[in-house]
Length: 359
Length: 92
Ligand code: SF4
Ligand code: SF4
Image (cartoon, rainbow over all chains, first blue to last red; front, side, top):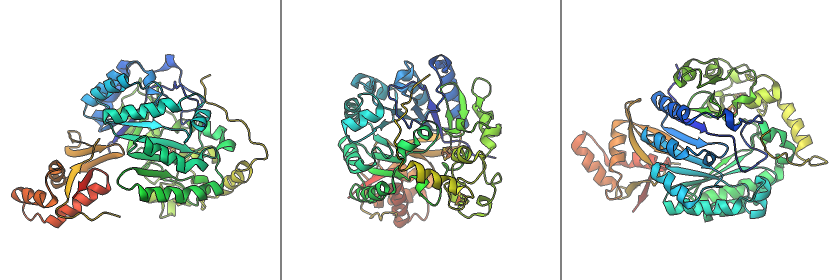
């Protein structure tokens, strides 16, 4: 039997003032009138805690757009959970943060699109940079720990040193530099986002040097650009092993990107309990453990480390969610990825970024 | 690489780290931005004494009253792992 989950990623809304072209939300965004009510969320938190979740990540979209956020924070806190606010910083005034902190936010995760105002605001699609810098200063004033999150891609990788300096200036204790994962929006914009080998070769040592220099002050987590690697990145701690995601409409996802696997039947908190979904649903059990694997993963020792890579990527690039992640050099489909690299990494004509928006 | 922690080092729970008891797992846990650590009884006692005033040696002494065979080196090793997981800081 599966173990109890440690965390709940609560995507309170898909609404967001920013329009990043690599957004991890699905291309089909949930509209406001389909969002869970406050009562629904309170019940979801209760069920998540009863199931074993100890961390609640309040995310979106932009969670600050939910007027009931203070109530949700207080409830998550009253359950004894660690409350993490994942925000763009837009809308985070000093008073709002003070109120949220007093209700039990333990940690703030702030997105940063690029190192400079111009770069940041171009990627975000709105003027957000100054508000982010301000939000960071409020977090510091409030004495809360801060993680800065940046998604890396061809448009900002050359500014890696500036990004690190910016996070330092913002007073972050952690910096997550995650190369883009290509699902949904990012898949659409892949030809604009795929980094070049030269960019990655430049960034790697800069990050390593900063990790050394800042040890004990700011932890830097670097997530690889998997298309360029010989092995995939690990899928969390395995599918349905540590965390569950609840989407704004109550869909319960084994992984935040799981809606891309259209063959997966997704359950909803309006129809079943988190307990039943976590332990008994076909979607959570689909890729648990190792029995679902085919070769080469089935007989590969690395399966304990990477769990065969990403299910969402396998589905998107091969049509089979149980296939070996095609970025793996042992995958029979690696040529698909190589072809993408050859054609999209340096396209003759770079398309315009499709900005994220609700339809 | 796990850092080496001296016996006179003074560990302190990091800012933003929460220690609590989980009824569901019937265990003490440490909650922090990047994850959850489920503690055994000894580790839970050590964590509760990482208050920024006691040294590793002091903690070993305090625990010696409660448990048999507590070696200061074991406590130092445990604290080193907690430093590695960014649960505690040490000064001194
Ligand atoms: S399936 Fe892919 S996107 Fe989902 S958690 Fe695993 S690695 Fe991440
Ligand atoms: S064959 Fe499968 S398990 Fe082995 S490295 Fe590749 S993806 Fe990982």
